[in-house]
Length: 360
Image (cartoon, rainbow, N blue to C red):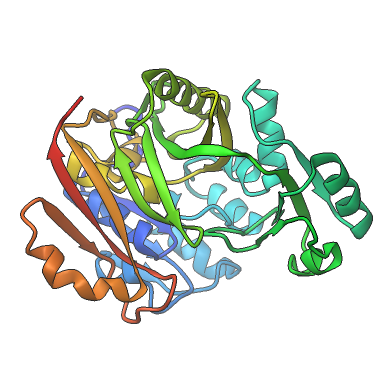
């Protein structure tokens, strides 16, 4: 049991009660590990399947202390954890992945600077804190370019495209006064991601390269194997391994990347957690991204990341979840519903993964 933080029968604390927290708790249960979910949202879908949950603010020191006391180790399903929350929990129990990864990836400027420091390519970028900064950045990077908040944006939120003729003051106003970053537009031919996992001993593994298709800035489908060359796949896997090692990371992270026409791979974003583009691993691999994350943060040996089937994962967004009956009737489809009670436009309600015999 040396090095094991959470043995069978122990309890893993999970910050965040959304679908990722729910799937982490389900994976933990498969290993005989109990889960305690902490989230301020009383409608959290992870609450439905957790052994225990706490519904309290992330800024509530008494609730955080009681939560920490009840678990053996703590992980999280989202990266924007308040620094004070992380400090309180880290003083009481192991929090994995470590807070350094949160500090590096929660701010897009810090994240891209870190990636560049490893000799890995990204889109060109500039910090934007004022109207003058934006004008200077646009002059340097050109149009189109993409203005984003440095923190909290996801699924297309907190960003706007600067096109020829765009009003810069209006674009900056859309950032809501938050610090921003301008990124050069990348004329990519594909959007891809690699999910990687690393254990306490520093051993790191990657799942197969995934080709992602988006609709309205939200992931629509993940396709594996990708339709890209082995050269691109090897480059992307090596990038993910370099990043996860440089962060001294324990757990699962995802690296989202652009592929250009000349087969160059550029990092777009790092997600220090299990990731939507890794959901296919639940059905096409012996050990899913969720189980491998639980294994890593609990101090267990890592499982295989090998793929036994080809897969296409499709998100069920908004009202598309109403097709669940027809999807459930498909012989090669596995339906995963998140237990959310209200289907809203742009809301991830579930996903379906279709598997096929392995082609390569």
